Image 1: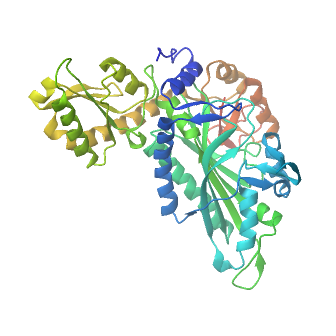
Image 2: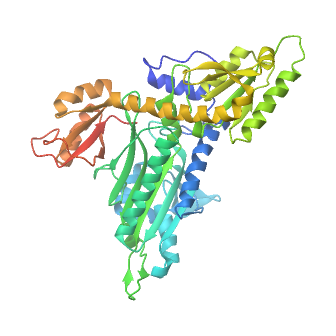
Length: 473
């Protein structure tokens, strides 16, 4: 492993090199695809485990739908197919012959799910339908970047059907709340929640809720979305049910999802000059124990003590790994686990055993000090909780440094284009004004709930809402 690029001078190269050196992912043989390596996938599994439990606790059931979708399904909802057409991968031949109808490799599953909902739904008693699937999807990406934009990526996609619009809206808001909880309380990433503009919302949706994060380089990252689909898809798929009064009605639909992009967000938000820094709640390894072996000596006592400590911590639900590889130097082990972002490193050698203590270093660089072995099962969980809190607090400061208010695009646009940063500004909601942002390589990220500015950032008309604008990944 080599030294990482300077995070302050070349954030993009630093990001790519961390992924490679920490063995999170590698390039796949097809352009735009990535192979998620075991350590990278372990991080995704921790995120997935937390969210999957929340999804089930809120009354949703996991299911699985096919990868291939008849092309005609996407054409049933005009805005949907228009929004996805440039990104579609289409199968035209199979079994040695041309197919009667081309099949689309799943870019998202609304059309297929709604085809099945139409078969299953008969009465108001069948509602609500609340399902979720963990799957891979394909969207042909022109500018791929590991975890952030890849041709194939992993995600969860929830789909629900409801009797009333209010129930559907409450569902979309409920899942957005779960996403925000995941981001802030587990990933330690402060986020901004709001509504997407008409041009930025999901193709075919009535309303798209989003949660955005501001990365340390000043660009915005869409972390996930939750859509109120209203009845457009229900009508496109002739999805009807009989209500309690015996009338035929269309249900109100939602869909919502987050992807492996969350891993990319973790890397960028918390990483430093040494590599990855993982929040303890989703770190696959929370504590790495490194035995300090003495040359030409019997090190069995050291190794036994290391495993004894590990077992005691595992009983406290701490994820621990003992690095007993005698072919690697202590220095190379330090480098390996620092770049992988393990929250706590524990060192134990002959002298430590004599003193009944270990040397404990945290990845945030806040402290390195001896700790009594007898107190470890109580001390370690508390220390991990403290690091989780500190990491979120540090991330909040990063976002604060990148958050600005600007009244006129002509004034803040050039600075945003050059240095990045997110700008809260006023907007009349005219799409022509929104288009002006592209001159500065920026976009509207979300409409904000508060209104603090009186005039649109471009024209002189009154502002209807505050909006967050930024360059984006």
